[in-house]
Length: 155
Image 1 (tube, rainbow, N blue to C red):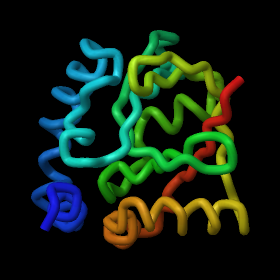
Image 2 (cartoon, rainbow, N blue to C red; image 1 turned 30 degrees about the vertical axis):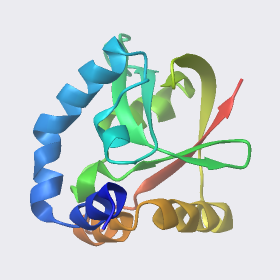
Image 3 (tube, helix red, strand yellow; image 1 turned 180 degrees about the horizontal axis):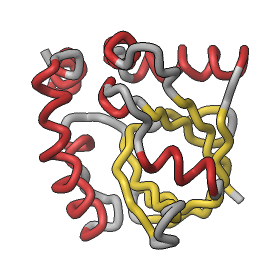
Image 4 (cartoon, one colour; image 1 turned 90 degrees about the vertical axis):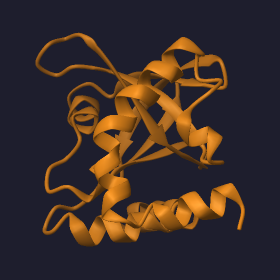
């Protein structure tokens, strides 16, 4: 099994989700230091970007590493929060101020995020699940919460 296949399978486990509390800050720092050229996810074959949103309460820049899928001329990102019951903070920031910057393979790209719904969300969700099947597991774990799906369009 390839490293990517192993990581995709591991993505379904609760222990993997729990490890996010420790891995995300480490991955954030690694992504910032290398301008997105090296990410923990990338080492496992996962497509990953660093999104910088504006904190809706603080007004300060907030960066988070996210899996992404290229879609409709932009980038899909999923607010799964590893299947927790609450939405991730970055997704609330993006709703409050849709202008953000992503760092991808050493390039900073200004984007505008748009929350998807209806058939458009369903199509995007299917594309994201093909890339990261554990999203179905996260959806089950999240309870009644509808996981937010965003399209980040370059501006």
